[in-house]
Length: 255
Image (cartoon, rainbow, N blue to C red; front, side):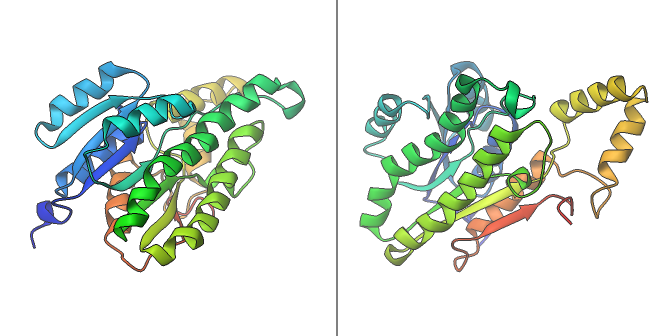
């Protein structure tokens, strides 16, 4: 079987699918033969990516933190056999000491990063269980497994996703549904560039010094890329025995 046909006949739903990691995952799955449904809160990036991918790509607007919105999404796809769900939607949340974070800020992070995973799984798992097969990959983060100063809601939410994943795997695994999580480390791109500029301003150093100090913590001496995250999702889906696992993809940042 050729690479583009690996997931032919399967449809993947990708939340947060209009940009960043979601877009990279959408491109990777589409290239591997899957039909993709790109989901997000803003229509424009979804439309652009669907047009870029061409055939076998659709899009839907949905707020994954809202039960009514997720229910509408599921209803709109009632005639589509969604056999892959990628829960990628998430927000970074506030950057501040815990004592300075408002409850509303804390709740917003958990509403999207954790409640969103719950609601999407709740909507699409029953049909997978009924068919006796399916795959769910939840995007967690290495920040759920190691300290990240002044980012308590984000770190706590990603640890919650890992816990949700491991337990859900035992609930639906016997029905033939694989549930796993992928924990990327820092991803090379605009967001990390901004972080390095801010760190350089804070310390009085240069952008290059801030970046070099950061990547020196990784075994490979670099960050991962969006393309690598997309490839990791494809690889995980190609491993039928993988269930209840959390896969670290951090260039050795945890180590």
